[in-house]
Length: 347
Ligand SMILES: *Cc1c(COP(=O)(O)O)cnc(C)c1O
Image (tube, rainbow, N blue to C red; front, side, top):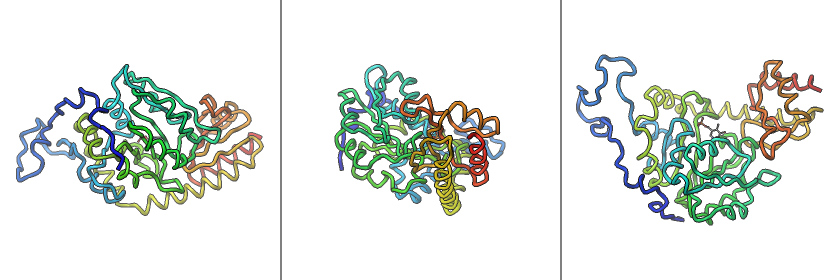
């Protein structure tokens, strides 16, 4: 395994920190039946007790599903939380920096700004692939994290594995690979590489393929030491009790998720073919996700045209590298047909 000096990468205040110890930490389970330790209201409802701060049942279910030990799993309030915690754990505000190949998901930049951490942007190639030498050239002794997204949002493509591999080998800080859309992809993701790279953090989410966006559950898979650091600084009860229960129940129905993903992939392919044949479409980018980046004749005009017919897509035409582009989420078969009918009218 490639190891890195995690202790020296971690901010000193975080290393020194004694985490909050909750009532549920100091007494977890055991034989008690009268709980007078957490200042809860004793009159029972479905919600009167604090939830498990360690999300043990949910982590056990995910460990089985993903083939990753529970010690390598961190759960957050959406992916937003692990993204923010990675900054807070490893980047000293005003001192360290992160490198973000663009165009990509906006939260890495927002979180950098919130945490007063310099971001260095490196363009992806014309086919939205990494230019690993340029990424490494942007790094210096103060670079702590490289944020990669594969399949990438908003472009839809997987990053070439050789390029990600090279960055994992050559960069001695944290390499985040955000796999929010990996369930829609044709290639396996980076979870199997966790055992080879202590600097790899894989982000996944229950918001997309699993259809649980409203529950807000993001997952970070990493070396147990990294998970320990993130766990130390998270808000103790970051996932509510009903959220944990609903997620556990949803995870028992893998077949349902797989059926929906299969339909969405089919629909993605149908949409890609049909979109490419439309006069208002100039280019359909390949997609390994549940959305398609489409270059059109006039993005603002077509966006408004669709909106007047009650269909909202994402206008990405102001994003560097995505001029004239709309990002279209794959909907139900009926929704996709309605989109195509509307676009045929757009001329
Ligand atoms: C949608 C998305 C997420 C998911 O975020 P949640 O906070 O878990 O809902 C994460 N990363 C990318 C790139 C996304 O597009």
